[in-house]
Image (cartoon, rainbow, N blue to C red):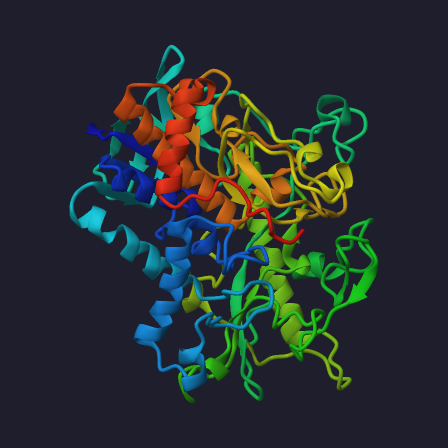
Length: 524
């Protein structure tokens, strides 16, 4: 039996962008149904277990008010519930893990608690309904609109048909797009299509996408043995070496992404950038009273467990399952190799004291609930951001292309990990950029909006639009846009293309704390 559930807005996908969209829409008075495939909302921040990747000025400007509230909430969570040292408690910019990838490295469970607290008033008040462990199965359309999405799971007796005037796709892979017949692209475009200097020569490769990763958390207890069972695919991964990689993938050898120059990593100590344990460390026990943690905890999202032997998008279920399992095996093999065979500076082999922290990610196998997906399906949009709009190489050192229809900001290098086409890193400088409203509007469908990495960007520009604060901003803008359109009886395309409506919408965003332009004095 299929029950019918109604709301003003249905959000398929409860990741970083989905949560931001739900907060925005609920704040504007909309009723919202948000689905999420895993038990944890939050996506990159929680179920994928990736501490935020952010730009250098994040503490001062360059993010939305609500994202800053989330960041402040994480710090307050540790102040409220943990015995911090006096020094840590007095640090306004507390970094719980002191990882050097971000100014705020924290446990996934902390992010989950903060997100739930932010949404709690709307959930308790009945305005937001969250269906976790819930997956979209099909969509029904009426002309150029989505009429409903049928989902399964989430505590439902069977299936539910979700009906709303607006829908957001906030899934990690853009899964609602094919179900609803929304035009989209995947993979790597060609130079002939986009004119981008770093796009592919020759034909486009729709199946050529960035590697994805099953992250995991671990601590280190010297003198103890926490060696896991030998993974079934360990022999393959121990010997595997891609033609473009300088050594076996399970080694301490990697490359500098910007130059592809080989480098040697170390696990310890954590004082320079070559040290992997300090890279995404999410707990520095030195911030806490003695005995709070037995050891520091780090999040393993390294070149050694990037999986590039196949995509999970637009492939059959059997192939998808095979790649997901192989990616899990790679991550477990990395841990087993570090525990048993990894060369040590003292001449020994292996660190058996490395302990897989299953509790940190909330799973039985110790791997994140979901893979960290770097590249999604992307809508064919009214406007597509290309490399020429924002790379330093293309624009010099002045500024990125200004967008009159800006709905937010972002800043990150164009950072593409090795791809399923067995191509190397693309890592190039980019300028602080804006998010154009045109990149959120599908070329045809009228009432579906993207809310995360599935906007109108290319394989190249996805490399800097995919990070946490940008995805949050995209989702938040999409939530406000749905609310604005319902309030005014207009369509997203009208809002972008009618100056008076665009101005009114941008005023709304500004009032709600979304920065639309970078300060003129910001560093480049």
